[in-house]
Amino acid sequence: MTEYIVKEDALTAFFQAIANGRRLLAPQGQGENCRLEVATGPVSLDYGNTHLSPKATFFPQTEKILAYHKKADQPKYNQYQDLGDHAEPTVIFGIRPCDAKGLAISNKVFQNDRFTDPYWKGKYESALKIGLACLNPSPQCFCAAMGGSPFGEMGLDVLAYPKEKGLGLKPLTPAGEELVKAASLPSADLASEIKDLEKKAIEAQGPLDTYQIINERKIMELYKADHWSATAEPCLGCGVCTFFCPTCHCFDIQDETSEAGGVRMRNWDTCMSPLFTVHGSGHNPRPSKTERVRQRFMHKLKYIPIKQDGVRGCTGCGRCVVMCPANIDIRTVAATMAQASA
Ligand code: SF4
Ligand code: SF4
Image 1 (cartoon, rainbow, N blue to C red):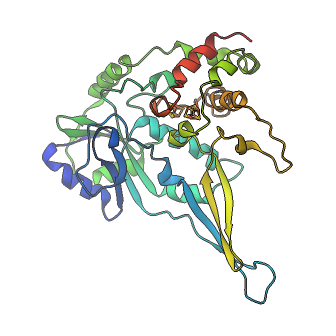
Image 2: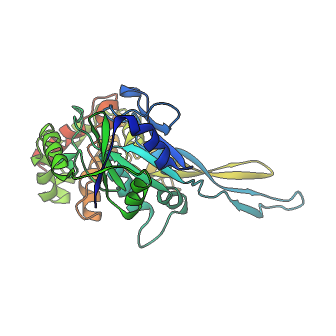
Image 3: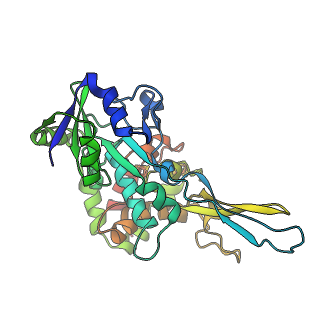
């Protein structure tokens, strides 16, 4: 596919053209406060990564999925209303490649050959996704070590990158090509520039070996290793790491009821909470913090790669590294996993 250029003075017209009556989400604000939100102000092109990952756009922190009520003379709820998928045609500009990959990983959980989650599907499929490559990855970023790239393409329709105060654009899907063509932009051959910029951005990140060693080690060797109690010790069980993570997708279903009716809600949940795995019987298969912390890292670095053809459940976005109040760093934990003995 042909690449295209957006010059600085054509940026506003470009954003109007790609929105074309749809909701446009784009980076708003600067630095650590940059967020992917409905674009009401200038679109930021210079930020490390957005404070929150874009997962809440497709999988809201809390979502009403069903309402029910009963007629006054009836003993039980007998009328139900599906509250829909809340999808609306959307263009998202500025997803970092690590976050687009995170959404693609979750997409395989919510849509696969066994079942389809209609609430995720509607939102995910009604959004066109334009990524913004990272020329200068932040110190906490390690996407390349996780099999990605600051110019990664997984889960995107178009990959953009900052270029002379404007943008370079590489369409990746037919929908992305159509979206970019609608903006009537000059075309250009950007392939070798993209390759050079990607090489430089990858070289700025840390070593890759640790994760290969984890790939090669057996599940039970990693699971039974003697470091887990020490690794888990500082954890407060707050769940911040999972709420900020672009690939964490666990949820709970709760009903808010009254005499006349109720609403069924889907809410984010976290494997770092002791309540997460409590069975109806009261039994808890992961009763201790050590077991919960081990589960999180084993899931990201071992179980998901087995289920998703080698794709790791961590995209190296670095949010948990920055946000964990106990300074638990997944890069350090991965290095310990690679070296520890059972
Ligand atoms: S953010 Fe840190 S302290 Fe909180 S649950 Fe995660 S690992 Fe534990
Ligand atoms: S585990 Fe941490 S670094 Fe990896 S994708 Fe999740 S938040 Fe980002």
